Length: 142
Picture 1: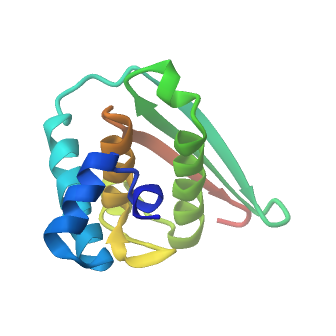
Picture 2: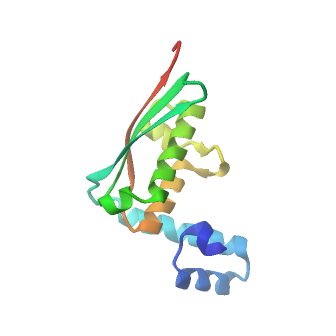
């Protein structure tokens, strides 16, 4: 269960559980470890990825994002597409003006987590740098 939730390797999950004897504490340890791994990958070049579109409700709000990664293999995964979808939902709901503002926002599905942490989790899981390069939000009447 912990492995599915965090995306961490089985050895890391086992060690975190042994060290903490508590699932919630183990989650925190694994999250910190994942963020540290993501920071190590910060200088890598990201030249693959996808442009993802989302239209909300009856077509009154739409979002386009450019989400990048290092390889086309990761860009084609379900997790990468799910992250793109979640970022679009966040942009639709919170209407940030810049990428930096978006990255600093609390995630709408888990206010204890920042959007930057959401991206860092997938970076840790895939072993690749993932970067939101750009987004545009369209809304009728704005």
